[in-house]
Length: 310
Ligand SMILES: Cc1ncc(COP(=O)(O)O)c(C=O)c1O
Image (cartoon, helix red, strand yellow):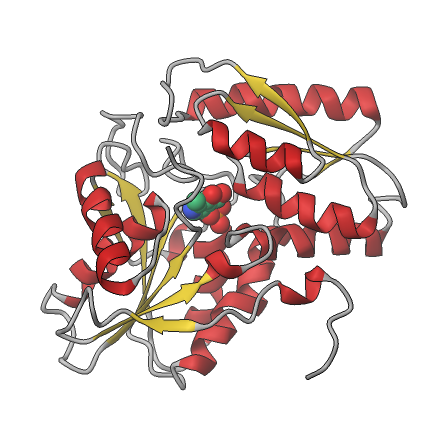
């Protein structure tokens, strides 16, 4: 086996799991094991490409500090990448995110500023909570002369999925993919992957997952900004959203996400977070919608592991 030059070589190229123990049919449900990456989530892909492209184009100088707002996963992803390239990292995080996340970040050498919640409550982070954390991250970046990652407005994040996640899935299913299902935080995963799938000759239905009551992509008013799908569903359309890429949006409630978290753990041995469970719940709705044949394949993403959720 070839020697890896750093932990960064462990990012991407994740396995595709068949989830037949939670969905025996109709069709085949497959999911990318993103939780096995060094920072523990799908965000490792975006963090790596953002830092490397900023180093390449000179917007990030050697030793320059890096700052970002995070719900946890982008923070640990950036911590991994910044450790390897030697950049000090500060993150702002809403107090609504679980305390386990702060411990993980601090142990990775990150300076964490906790931002009081505006209208959410612990475990349930709203769009306004995120905005407060973003505002403070911008202030710190100006104070430190830091490189501000700005994941919601940084188009490079989606490229990680356009040139990584999606082509990997395509190869793993040998070009036979009926639908791709993904929840939306910044939208990088959904947008980048959908861009790739929409370029292929055989059509793939691209389905976004939203928390019940915060279904802005489906064009509905927000009736329940607080939900358990941390890292996603901020009740506003992400700034870089491309409406032409979405074929359908499916809403998943907290109880459904909880049910699938339990099923994934007990039947598949997969202890994942709420957004991963919501993705699986939505993918099953797609497979059982009657739109596809018995042989259909639907792919989704297991965004992170369940350890850091209280
Ligand atoms: C647990 C979790 N799931 C899903 C997402 C959504 O990913 P994206 O920002 O690519 O839309 C995130 C983003 O931070 C996340 O932390």
